[in-house]
Image (tube, rainbow, N blue to C red; front, side, top):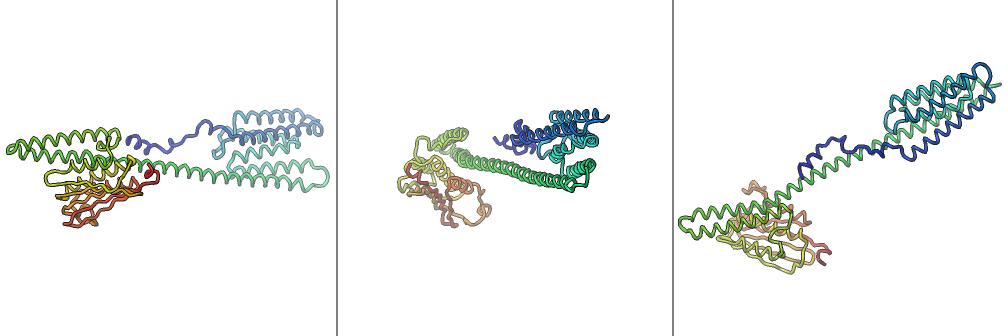
Length: 421
């Protein structure tokens, strides 16, 4: 599981999220906008051609104008299929830029021969503003506007109408301002979306790392409370059996049998650990029964462990029972390995909204405020117990004074649902 997680953490950012086929397709709004623009172009082109036929035709240039109208409309239609505009936020392709330059050149030539094609500049204006970045779209808009104004003045009859000079730049300025504003708003929105995507990716990576760390802590606590304790007990028993093998063979065999029994329990714990099951002592037993069995099992030459129950715990969630049993195992392992105690007591106290476990001994004690290294301990048992208590929503307290023993207290609150159950 950790190998998979590590691979995920080192996955390139480009593989985090690739656009799907649906994301590459135009949205409904984009399709509607494209349809409106094409309809406007068709209407303006038809009206310009009709005006030319009714008012401006005649002379040798008529054939050229008709050919330019046909080329202009054909080129515009082919651009929709062969050189589609880019999606928002992406640069235009070289094919689209070539098409835009070609259709503008044809329109300029048509405008020189047939001023009635003036208003076809609007679709070209939209195409330029939509596809090009503002630093290029604004100059293009200015050029198209100048051509429109010059064409209007050239065909004007009588005194110059100020609207011919003012109206096209005003319309172009408004359209340009709106498009530039929308372009910048879209850029800001894309930046926000990119930040959100990066934040989500970083958060996912952090959660994965936290999950890996939590799993490692869980594994270390499980190993410490089960396999490590079993191996430690087996080592002590086998060493004791070796010491008395010649002088007292019966005692040596008893130590060996006890080591074998511990080995069997350790094997059962290991199998349940592999399958992520509850502690073996809780299989078919309540928490008080498991603690009583633990006290009996830990009692032996030089150490007497007692168990006392205050109150009726009733049925408890598996996670709380497992946490308290593991805490008791870890605390007694510390008593056996470090405390040099002769007596220890397990006390399970059940209240209406809380269940607590106290493990007290009459050993050598230590300075609870000093760092683990200063106490001469390896410092793993108590942190593991604190982690178990915290994961169950509880707390763990340690009271100890050199020469006066140690008391480890774990308290886990019970919710209303757990109390009723």
